Image (cartoon, rainbow, N blue to C red; front, side, top):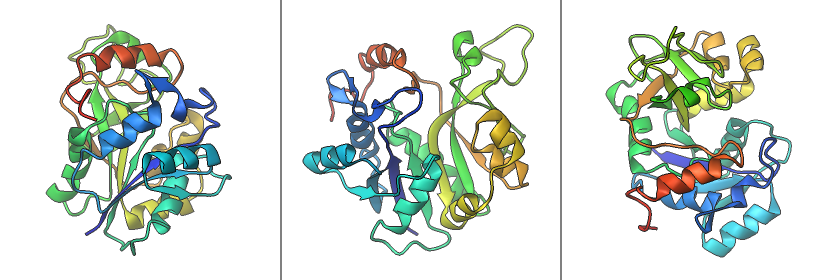
Length: 254
């Protein structure tokens, strides 16, 4: 079984144009993500997928594998699927393709391990998503952060930018979880996803994963033990990441 990691990145991010090459603690965001993803030793392929010459040139200068994709993709998973087909490995139906979002500068081998673990534990699992505990109300209320509702088996029921599950008064023990920006798919599942039209809940919530729920298929959460974990969704997040890096165990190792 092959494990293929794809880091999708484009300069025209709607909320933060130029985000992949924006400096964080002296290094472009994309550099943090790729070098930290390399800490996971199970990759057969790890590459950046982009449609931008500026990102291609940066990757080649750094020695990062890079795959050029169409400039018509509006969703990261469509870019990931195209890149997987061009990665130099013949991808079989049950191979695993991992989307490592290029705006997760605090990822590490533990986050990739978490996303991979459900596949090993249950061969029927077709897709996974990193699920990070929410311990503060600001994160819970932030519409830039996608929250998860799941069933007792850990299968995703719904994702939303609204604060779910409902709490009359927020508590860090209330079980709220957020999407961590790393997704694993059996190749046949990712192919199905890209060939299936947008669903009503996906459009209403602006959450890709609801396409899976809407069509009665399953995506298993990959829970991560709580630790500081900050995505970069807007320029205001940069200072939060830089503060978290000061105590991050991987900082200084890449």
